[in-house]
Image 1: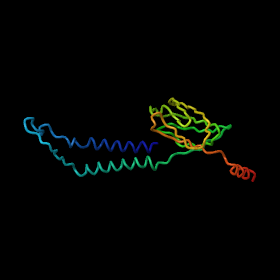
Image 2: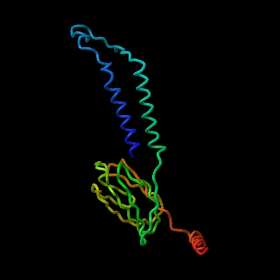
Image 3: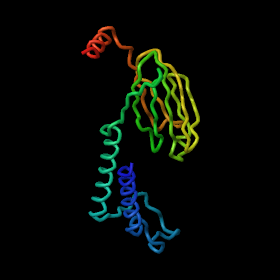
Image 4: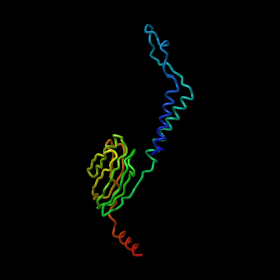
Length: 190
């Protein structure tokens, strides 16, 4: 998380430096404006910008595009298989600047207990919604909120924050096939 905060802070600082360092290059001084008695022209007056400023704006734009592509296409999602305890599949999901893990793997036909530990004060993360199971629950700050359900069909089900900005996935796998169960029994006997 600190690396992401550092990157966002660096980009924001870079933008602030660009905005503050030049003293309003595009603005004209008041005394150079046309007097109201003269005829106005319909053409724009070109204001030349220094090459370093053009280069900095271009480099900043390319950098932001790169960060966006990395964020949406190349960042690794954190996945976790549910632990089974007394017949209930359990996973604790930390809610801090998103969901961690943001991908949960469970088995169909067994009860699931998701424990959401909310640490982020952001209003976006005040609630969690799991539309595939018709669940919507508020997440109080600095508390663990449990949600229980039993998935019946294999597939991928999305869970989101209240504003639909942060997302996660619940992957429901089918029950073990008879061949897998036989292989498990054989390996346990050996």
